[in-house]
Image (cartoon, rainbow, N blue to C red; front, side, top):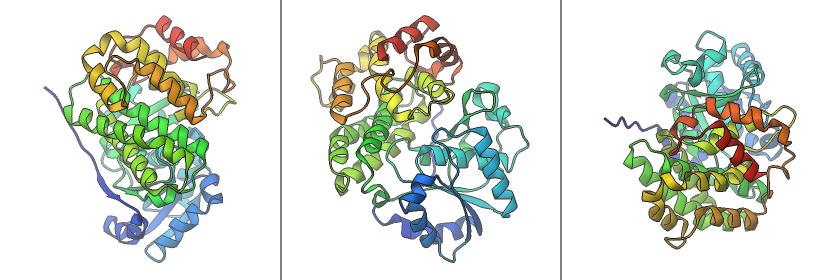
Length: 376
């Protein structure tokens, strides 16, 4: 028996931001907490969203989202939400702001502590429809969190864990590629590789969900065809539209499950004192994971290579390594500042991550250590 679930309302195109006032009214949000980060504020994007809101709702700006959202930051934002008497949220930014806003929507409507809602702690069943309404507005084309049912948070115990529930889906994904024009090349490349990793891992995950696989392949083709264009020219409107669509499709598809790439990148994103970018980690981990999974995905290899635009007998890991180089991404985990001393703890954490179970080939602790070493 295959259980297949999709998703939420999406407004997608250049100029979609102008729909925000009507959507706030439709959802009954009259006092919104606008969750973002200081980079988005500095780029003037938060101001554009506030201008779009106008008189449709009272908006309180909270810009304290860290690169990898933490439980402490969630609780600080939740306090701001409560003090302002908010009845909904607007998340503006990348996956970190959207994930943090989902956790705020949860913890302001459910009893604490937040840890009890982590999927690996049996939290899925504890999340009810009472979650506060959330509108998600991406300013990057990467995580696709605007259509994702998950929120990944670094908990106070140091573990980076996923909160998973269909109730965490934003009530609206407002996707305006205009907000990504001029995004710096490095961020464009790293977030774009996050979308590519989502599409690939979802496609090769073993669970049965043909619609998700079809969406993943479509997203992969769009991303492969446009990521280099978007990285070279931040004002390429066609490339920006296609990359935002690819990112959204990657997250629509990963309802099916991810795999070993994310099982490792989640705990790597929680290494103390080293704010490692999630998309860059996924880009570097993807080749060794593809090599590890090769024996288990032979039946899908031709379709995967076709979506990548390479010959049927080509090695997709080699292609991804070349793409990473052309995009100017770091060459290794070492180049990102990681020390080998963390590998043991990362391998242990990967075995406990919710994405470990949906990798197409069962990985052991030693397998994870070898993959980390290969990316180092």
